[in-house]
Length: 235
Image (cartoon, rainbow, N blue to C red; front, side):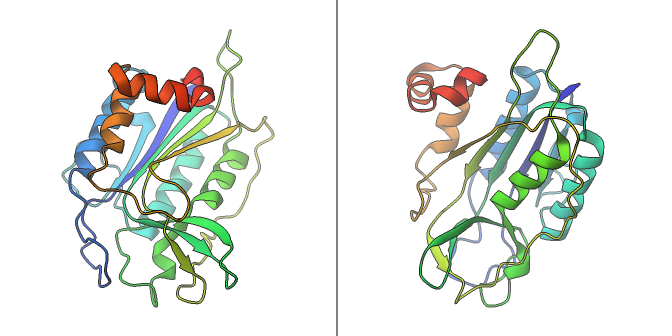
């Protein structure tokens, strides 16, 4: 049984052609900080951390951050982690939005891969977070460590959640077949940098506060423990 992690960090959207920042400063730095926390505090082996990023020189990188590369890395992750994983830590930092239907009702939180261009043609450069969560939950199963009653899938998402309508973009499903594990299914916890309908503040301090909280430092630790008791009691 192993604890494992999946990281997606996109600092440079080199193909971006709409009114979003093509560069998200310090995204790689924060992702590396999260990776180091996994190694130092959660005792993960580097080989159990799958890391999709746009920079091929980044330490620990295992795949590119295009949609197709992320999809294949998720499949590889599932093949390695199936029926042998306790806790799962998933970290995303990049662009995103809240997908709403033609009546403006939220249907999915969407993450943008590095090959996103613009909304009228890039529905196939997006990832539905809930689809990934559901697919991993049912595909991996969950194995509890001896002497422990805890297991969980923990998601940390630093991305915007402003609304974009299905009238403007057609987000396609990931297209990975479900192969349900016979093991029990882990509970899923998600911590966002912003609320539904809002943009994420690039300079808002979320990743710094997250890393401080995870590492048990000062006010950030008290804020996270007070606001997300269930999540951080589990950690």
